Length: 315
Image (tube, rainbow, N blue to C red; front, top):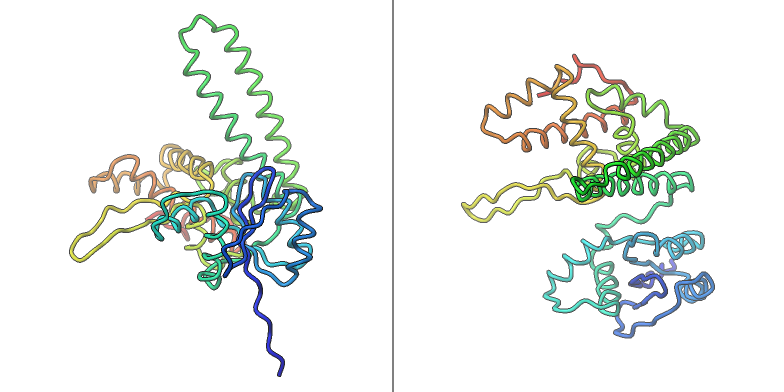
């Protein structure tokens, strides 16, 4: 019986202009241009390989796309994951070269615990980018309003805010068009049946759900960054905190949805007040409602059903 060859493990640190490549078991780090021709030459040399690639904003996409087309397995590692791994090893410095070695080492030791990259369609990629850009515009609009208030620029500020609204409307129309192209309207309607969930929150939750093959709600909650991290030792019980991994915009939208669900409807209001009567702050109670909304969204998407208040207790 022929033995199956083990894949070569490469750690690749990504920047705008270059890629730092390290093969596990070797301290040598090779630097190549972040261009299609150089990447294709690298993949030709390592046709049987597993790549640990640091996820950037967009700079890693060319490498990941070309590697997937050639059947090379890719594992995307977030900057936060790499930072924590570096600290666990007592690393005192971080450079592109060091990160390439760390990525190769991480993949070699944790490959069974990591999920290979799964490509998205062009429409899904564009939709995700638009959601991020929209979040940035909303943040900038708020910052400008606060910083220019009381500066005697009211007329100019109103004109600027009007322009922001126009751009946001155009983005929302494009998001709606992309959702229709992807065949998402039915799932979006299911999510919008949940109290407090509006069109944008529904779209963000659905985009997150479509980003992976979630068979249980816990990985989905963790993907949203709403899972709880603990630090217990002996008799000491540490304070529970959210991990806040993943896209912060989804959590912001869910928090707004939780506020709407407790104010404009009767389904979650009793739970919200009961949590506060137990001594929890308003924010803590709303975060719990956020988690409930996310779990409910997962259940509706998985079961392909709509919200039923009697079948979905708030407590």
